[in-house]
Length: 322
Image 1 (tube, rainbow, N blue to C red):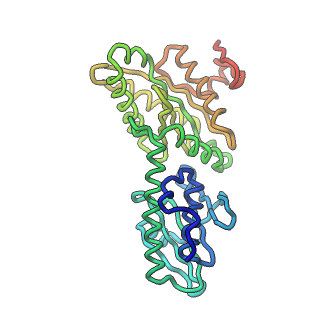
Image 2: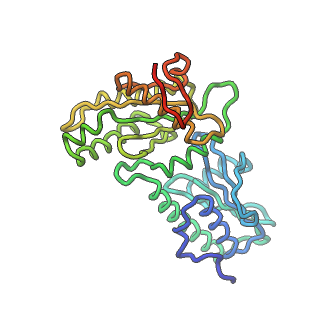
Image 3: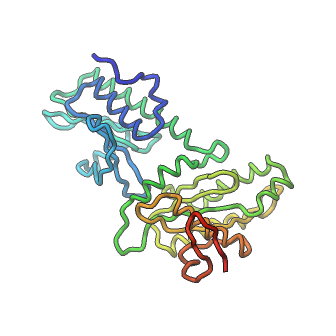
């Protein structure tokens, strides 16, 4: 058997997700030597995810729509339980599910001229464990240590997936980005101290997740008292109601020692293919409008522009309020 193309001990250091997938596929190819090996990882957010396919021969990851369409629902259910599945009678296809917790997040497929023997099955089970550990370490690097929310690094990857997600034609539904900023937070730190301030941030994170009550809505901490929310599959009115629910739940909560706290929220639709900086810029405009007009409000960028309440001179320039 030839040596692996990289040290097994270095596997957890492969931080980038595409590189992790390519490393796993290369490892399987080297240790098992199948005729073909590929790995498909779930990308995007929502109930109809896309899959990113990696083949070592190509040396790159390719986003493909419906990579697993040929797998029926019953087989996917078994894969979701962690079962390794064999199909065919020559060539033989072996499907190896890669789970994080109970969630099927990726799938390795090998194609060989013979059915896998006990040694091969042992290697594939080991690959499952390695992948789980790599992803756990990767996820740890993408979470804010204090609040447990995802961080800016995680946001960048998720936003890129959302920006490339196909939009249902004519439905008005899509992805939404919102910035949630705690009002007068510096005064809280100055008056009660940073330890209390940290407790407030932890509670804010909990309240936002509880108000959204949807695993497909993602909350990120950007630093300080600023949070970002990504939502999917909503039209403008639904997005406005969801962000207003976040604002109202925080306003109604009695924070220990501090009392009532409010937040200002600005949100915008994520446009297909745009960089995150553009969407964040538009949401920022809406947040600053909320701050400038009394705070404790949730405003949509498009609505403000339609009313002439703000002017957008581009990310490099200042925002003028009317």
